[in-house]
Every structure is written in structure tokens, then in C-alpha cells.
Amino acid sequence: MAKIVVGLSGGVDSSVAALLLKQQGHDVIGLFMRNWNDAAVTLEDECPWIDDSRDAMMVAEQIGIPFQIIDLSEEYKKRIVDYMFAEYEAGRTPNPDVLCNREIKFDVFLKNALKLGADYVATGHYARREEVESNGRKIYRLLSGLDQSKDQSYFLCQLNQQQLSKSLFPIGNLQKSEVRKIATEAGLVTSSKKDSQGLCFVGKVSLPEFLQQKLSVKPGKVVLIDENSPVLDEHKKNLGSSDAGPLQWAHRPVFREEDGKVMGTHQGAHFFTIGQRKGLQIGGTGLPMFVLQTDVVNNIVYTGLGDKHPALQMRALELAAPGLHFVRNDLKLIDLINRKLKARVRYRQALFDCHIIVTESRHFCVFDLAQSSVTPGQFLAIYDDDELICSGTISQ
Image (cartoon, rainbow, N blue to C red; front, top):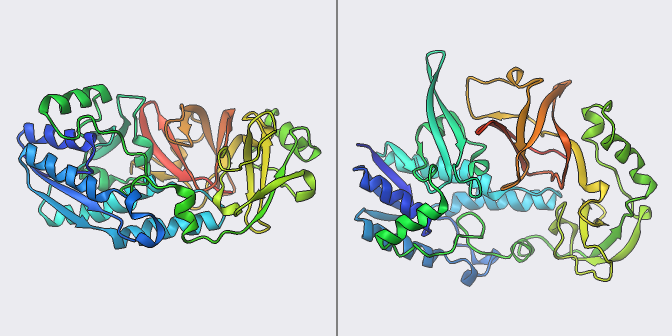
């Protein structure tokens, strides 16, 4: 049996993960990560780490395992929060959950667990890890969780072989309903607790309010771009062309204030993201208004009516340097060229068909069908069947 440190979050998923490992006879330790203690950038009563840590401690007592709280707030601020502020200020939309897994749970937390003599760390992610051999070498595959409505492999897309070799996902082969049932039958205090909707290990925080603590309010114009505007002609032509190349398919239209109609004001372009619907506070437009682009230099938010607006649609995306990160060491970029793959650009999005093209060292993902609200700063995750094989950051 192995010595396993479980990241107890105070939720039902990690609680059941710990319970299952204990029932299997492993030497289990519960660790709660305190990742936030800076009341300057959020409201303390909306950051319920104290309640969550109490629930995690009660679960550990019920299961009969040792429990500790580990303070990782300094690393979390440096690696996650500061990066978030910088990305939003630059007009990009980061994914803190992907970063938290790469930088905190499976790096800082993992290293602390190994110092405690752990063989593995375990979390309550709905994902699976499979060990196989390739050319005589041990390879760890990252697979989707069997509950497709809860699959969290996307959030693990930046992990590497060393991290996966020390990671376990005990509930990855279960449905959420099964996890709830196990928790209920065991009488765990978290059995009926709602799933967390907040930032990774920070809690339920209003993102605009969170960002406004560090990013200045800067009133600017909201400009509406008509879907029939001439500025979109080339973009629409490329969307419908099978002859255009990745440079054309991944090119976004460039808007200027004179291309549209000023509809109102906003509190700062850096508070908005492509595809955003809420927060514009402009009514009387008939169809709902969506953010098409943000210009943080001139502080303009460009919008369009309806989720089918052509400026929201893309046939391809370009990946930011250094390009694709491979989960597996035995796969290379050449293995993906001209190969039918599947991908997603956000959590819980249905997988779509795509292929990879490399042009002059620039990496592109080309979609069989146009995708909506492809957002710079987010992550593209590439799948081969149910295996997540690589990922990359979406470029401008």
C-alpha cells in the first residue's frame, strides 16, 4: 500500500477521493491548501476558506486520517493572482484553474507532499490516469473523466509526465451521482454540499469586483459593430472559404471607433472578455449584446448583437509561443500534422474536429467548423479520442 496525500478542499469530490483510498488500505493524509489571505483584493466574507477548511477537517476525522492545513498563499499570489491581473490588464483572459493545477496543486503542493514522504498526491478531479508502455518506457496518459458532464481533464491540460507519475484521480471513473451516493452512505458532512463556483481555492468571488481592487476603473466607450459592416467583409469571406490558409482563418478583424456606433460607456476594457454578455448594462437592442473585442490601448469595448455575429466566429486559432505543450514525452509535433483530432477552447465545451498546421514555426489549430468566442489567453486542449495529449495558450 502507498502513502498518499489528498488535497482536501472541503468539497464532496475530494472527500470521496480520500475515503476510497482509505478503504483500499492506503496510508492517507488530508491536506487543505490555504491559497488566499489577502483581504486587499477580495471581500473576506466572500472567500470562505475557513468554512471549507473546517469541512475538510471534519471529513478527515470521519474517515480517520491525519489532517493539516498548508499555507501556499504567497506562491498562489505570485504565480496565479499577479499573473491574472497582468493578463487582464493586457487585454487577455487567463484561466486560473488551469494555472492553479500546473503551478500550485501539482507543483508546490506536490513538492510539499513528497517532503512528507508521500508516494502520490490525489485530488477529486473527474479525470483518469492510465499507465502504459511505449518503446520500453513507462508513459502516463491523461484521460477524460467517465462522467462527461463533469469531465475536468481540460483543467489538467498543462500537466507533464513527472506530475502525472505522482498523481491519482480516485473518482475519475465514477459518475457524480455515484460520488454523492458514496458520500451519503458514509455520512460525510460534505455529501450534500454544493460544488464550488469560485476561483481555484479562493472561493466565490465576483471577478469584476476582484479585478477592480487592483486594476483601475477607466471609463471608455462601448461601440456596436453591425454584422453587415464592410469591416467584416474579408473576415466573412475567410470564414466561408476552403482555400484560405491558417493565417487568414486565424486573423481577427481590426475595429476602429468609426466602424460602429457608440452605445454607451464601460468602466475599463480590461474588465471584459470576448463572448461576454453580462456586465455591459446596455438595453433596448433587441438581440442580446456580446463583446466582440477589447482594445485596452484605446480603452474601447467592441460589441455585436446575437451569439451568431460573424466577428465572434473563428475558423482557426494561433498558439502563443512556445506552441504546444505535450502531456506525453513520446509524442512530438510531427505526430499531429495532418491528423484528425478533437479539441476544446473552454471547460465543458463539446469537443470539435480539428487539425494542426505549422507554418514558418507558427502553430495553428484549424477547425472543421467555425467556433465561437475563441479568447486570447485561454487554453486550447487537444484530444485523441478520450486522451488529452497536448495544449497551448491561445494567442491574439
